[in-house]
Image (cartoon, rainbow, N blue to C red):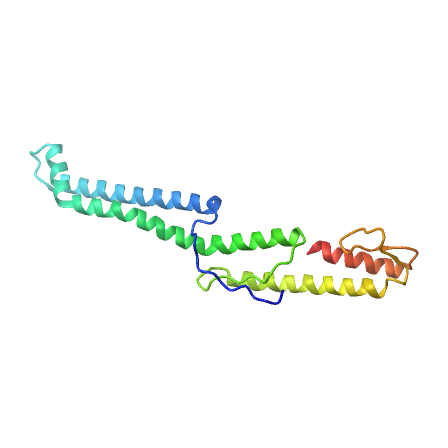
Length: 190
């Protein structure tokens, strides 16, 4: 439990499709609309500044001769732009995905090693906060286990278990019952 998990090199950048897919579609849409708007405006400027006695087909051919290569290059760069967006979104989707996986493990009662994120990931402080919370939970579990062992002969019945602490008070004073109740709530909150 004391071993810190070493960051592993990213093998997959597309880790959370629920978050990353809408962002990629939005970026692709914005890029496409930007390029389309730029080309239409450039074409309109060329038509207005060109000779007035030629037809629209001549302007289209002239536009393609002047700007065709730029159009092809910009549309070819779009997949590279989207790949970069996948990598960038992974810097926040990856840590959240790992945190969610760790929280699922905690809720199912499994041991969870301390979280570490890669140096380039966003939300570095989130792993520190999770690790501090888990240290508190583990310390409280340890204290409750130690307290249960010490109080075993003092009015506690462990044959029938109830609550998160696994203890049930029998014929105890009000103070002992309140202490057990507080211990149960401490574990259930975390």
